[in-house]
Amino acid sequence: MPKRDYYEVLGVPRSANDDELKSAFRNLARQCHPDVSSDPDAEEKFKEINEAYAVLSDSEKRAAYDRFGHAGVNTQGMPDFSNIDLSDILEGLFGFGGFGGFGGMGGRRVRNAPRRGADLSSRVKLTFEEAAFGIEKEIQITRDEQCQTCNGSGAKPGTSPVTCPQCNGQGETRQVHQTLLGSMVQVVTCSRCNGTGEVIETPCDTCHGRGLERKTVKKLVNIPPGVSDGVQIRLAGEGQPGTHGGPHGNFYLEIEVEKHPFFRRAGDDILLDLDINIAQAVLGDEIRIPTLNGDVELRIPPGTQPGKIFRLRGRGIPHLRGSGTGDQLVTVSVQIPTRLNAEQRELFEQLAKTMDPDIKIQEQSFFDKLREVFGG
Image (cartoon, rainbow, N blue to C red; front, side, top):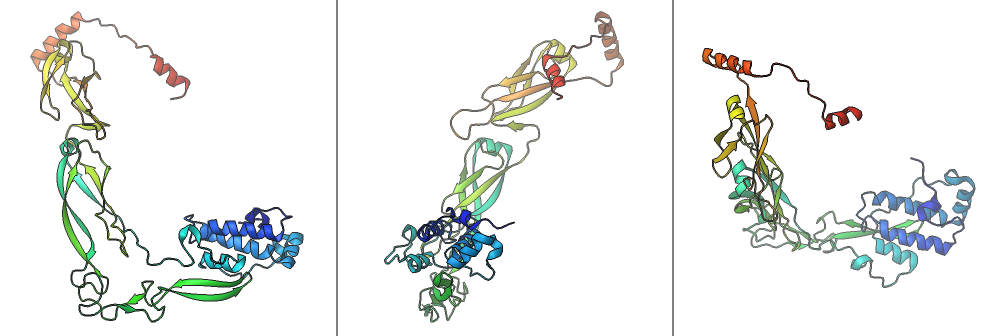
């Protein structure tokens, strides 16, 4: 991609003076520094801001840029400021003596601040009925827990972690670089202690210095009525342990519902397809059909047509949020016999003589005409 205009990057007019450039850079640096911004492109934006300011704050480079554009300045080899402590930049550039940092961070990044543990997840399989009525399930959670041998210190019993000799317990080291913007202090994690400020000379035999050991715990989970496939139940504080005194993460239990032999689900309604014979459709009948709460009587009125839907109110799934229950919808399909015995054939032939033999062409319905107009 072509480079953006440096004035556009800083958001200033081409007539901007040094103070305006400095103010624009300061504001953008606060917003886009990778240690402050959660934007995934923060590092690239910060490099772009620094490059623009490095050119425009230099009178000779700015003059060359104004005359020839990007071709007039050589920006190759410019320093990477993405890992530099932002408070040090502002203090060195703008004289913010005693400045407290952004958002209360202070002059140093807090590397050993409490951090929340990672979330964990698992799946549990339920029958159709269990999802509808709810159930208490025992699940297993495999996670890290404090090592019982060393009480979480990571050091072999009888020994203790010692202060890191490389960073003197700071967890970080600082390097000073001379750049176009002046002296810059780059803060990096201590390679010896990985930022903890301590090293373990004699690791615990159980956890090998982690301070944590892998364990599987059993939990009883109350699964409420009305859950559906893909619903997640959150178990607060049942995930991985936090670091430096931070809280545990959460555990998410994802529901997987098995298919039922004949029930289907649409929201909180239960769908059932029912086959009746031609005599039941013509003459009517009273039949017993299954529901989640047991068999019930269903009256088939005379002259029932194929596709007729009967609604059994309150025979569906309990609402997961709020009170009430869905319905059961029974769709009737009329079975046409493919084989007849002699007696049945005779009866149908007698019936046929009493029926109107003319074929009736069905007219298009209003919705059929609409589908034709719109190409459906």
